[in-house]
Length: 421
Ligand SMILES: *Cc1c(COP(=O)(O)O)cnc(C)c1O
Image 1: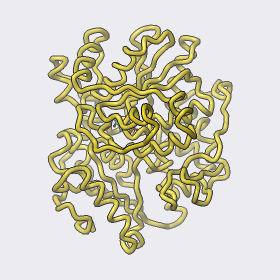
Image 2 (image 1 turned 120 degrees about the vertical axis):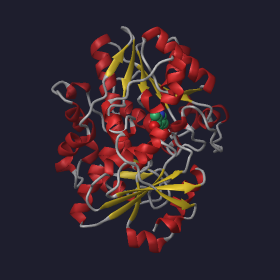
Image 3 (image 1 turned 135 degrees about the horizontal axis):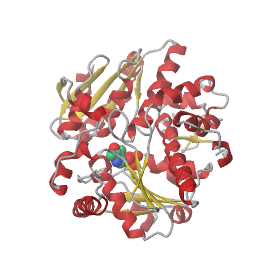
């Protein structure tokens, strides 16, 4: 199996090469050269989450140097599951928040970190990962790369602009993880990372690399739970579900579209957006125009220029095809709040602000088919938003409690990339 660039001007590479490179040399994103098909009978013998992951991912690693180790990587990466919580016979929530930092990004970040570490050991190389974060990404990446030999991580976050619990998840590590509190906003952090990557002397000296969702190694594992959820729904209801995905950079949804193409029994995929509606505008106008991001309650979806749009547009080929396959709704902060309250009243179930966008879309759809909303983060991460709405405390899950108990350490710097080295 080989991977090609969305821009069509880079050599074909293996999965491992794509994982180490991040971005393709022509500036595009790596996508599979073709999509294999996995008949659902292949899952009949599967008894665990890592086995399911192996079945889904194996075709993408045929001929790769990690092929012989893929089962081991899956067992190490997916040491937590993604259970479905059923409200009733038709409606369920896919809980993607049982990993170390209580958001779905743990699935991709852990797989990427384990694959990278093994590749670097083979090549006897070292790497420094730079990651700018507005919230969840940095925590998931820090947790996944913590204590991995040969890899240093520099996490950049805007000082005072992330929630207290999010900051804790960035600053509680130490060892090979350095957290930088940047005097500025998220865009400053992002441009410092970009400038560092353009400083070729620095790139060579440190072996700089990135771990954001443009990396193929984060995207592929996000297909696994799309299979898990749809197979479970099929078993329970005999019908294919409509899957609703709270989206920002559309990496999570891209993984599910890929899963559907290779055989996950999903009837339809619908995206839930917050007030950042760049994708919706593309659907309406046929022109892709990036926007400045708008701050919302669902802050991990505050993206004005979704980096994986390039993969989705490449996947569907043209605007007509895109609009026939992709539908999306934009949900306001006010509706996020009322939806958190509604779901609590109706189902005694607490959801995070991101998941609330998905729940609102479920309501709009009035689907006759079973519906699954991806719960992208644990509500306890957003206690200051959720608790006033439901009028009670959200219990902290054990994995989050462990992190919150650790001491914090960060380095305060000006918004200048040279201060990172
Ligand atoms: C990152 C994130 C999203 C958005 O996912 P994308 O892959 O960027 O579309 C949604 N919810 C939460 C909690 C997140 O951390």
